[in-house]
Image 1 (tube, rainbow, N blue to C red):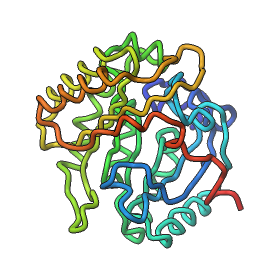
Image 2 (cartoon, rainbow, N blue to C red; image 1 turned 180 degrees about the vertical axis):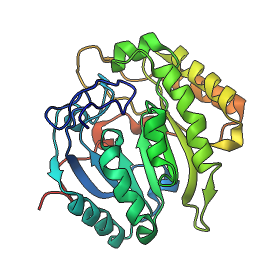
Image 3 (cartoon, rainbow, N blue to C red; image 1 turned 90 degrees about the vertical axis):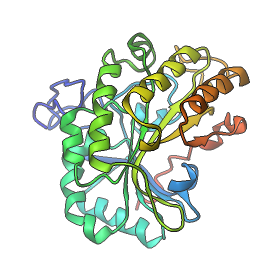
Length: 292
C-alpha cells in the first residue's frame, strides 16, 4: 500500500496517504451489497447473485454505466469486520454466489479475508472484472476465485486508450485469461443449472466499433476452445452524455454481425436481447446492504 504497483498501471501511489489512480486508498469502500438479478441466468438464478459493488476502478471508461461509483467516488467505507458481515448477510438472503464487482483495487485488503472465510461461506465466489488484471492480482485470487466474469473490452489498444485511458489493455487481457483458466477451468454447473466454476467472457458491442468486436472474438478463438468458457455478448450500450463516449445506441446490423461471428466459432452462452438498451440495467447505488 505504501507504493502501490498492484494493478497494471503501477502508479506507485502511497495509498496510506493518498488516493490512487483507481480511486482507492487503504480502506474498503462499497456502494451497494444486495441480491442482483440482472447478471447472466446461470449467475443470477431465482434468488439473485450476492453482488458487492466496490467503489473505484483501475480503468476510466468514458461510457461506464456505473460511473457514479467507478469514477465518482460514491460509496461507504467499511471495516474488515463489516465486510465479512456483509458477505454472510448476503448468504442469509439465499443468494446463489458472492459476486465481487470491480474488486481489483482492494485485493490486498480483501483477499486474505476471503481466504479465511471461504470454507465457511460455502458459496461460489465470482470475480466480476474488466480483464485489466496483472499477474500479481490474479495470484492473490488463486484458490479464492471460482468464477471469473470478465468484461473483455478491446482488441485495439488505440481504442482502449481513447475510451478507457490505458494503452496496454490488449497485452494485459491476453496474458490474464490463460491464468484465470488455469485457476477455474471449464464451466461446471450444479444440478439446478447454476455455474459453480468457470469463465464467462462478456463483450459489450459498442456503436461504431464493430470491427473491434469482431477482432475480440477472433482473439478469444485463438486463446480458448469453444467449450472452455461461456460467452455473454451484450447489446445494452446506452449513451451517458459523457465527453468522448459514443452518442448513439447500437444498430441491429452491428450487433447481429458480431453475433454471427460468435456462432461461426461455435461459442456457447448468452446473446442479450436488443431491447436491453436502457438505464434499467444500472442498479441504484444507494448504499443498500452497506449503510447502517
